[in-house]
Length: 117
Image (cartoon, rainbow, N blue to C red; front, side):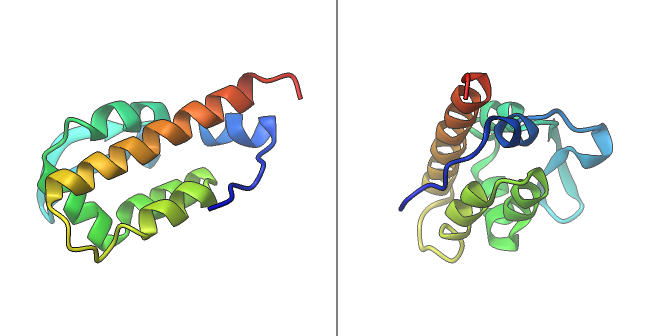
């Protein structure tokens, strides 16, 4: 899959820290918050690897992560996560794939944001 070249300012914008009302709030299921939030993609990458795997499955199947990544302006990550929905894989494997994709994307965005384009 080819990744569209992203500009330094776009990368920095995608990595920005959001106010609490725009943060991602993790749930186990509807009405069952985990009490864990992420205010930026870097926090998300750190938090998602340790969340309850059923939470990862819940949010992937609902498209919640896609919506949040779209709001951050990251079409590439949105598209990657969309491919995980509907897959017949365990919640643990789903969380691992999600964690890996987000961590890789954060690393790419940080390199771009820090570059001297």
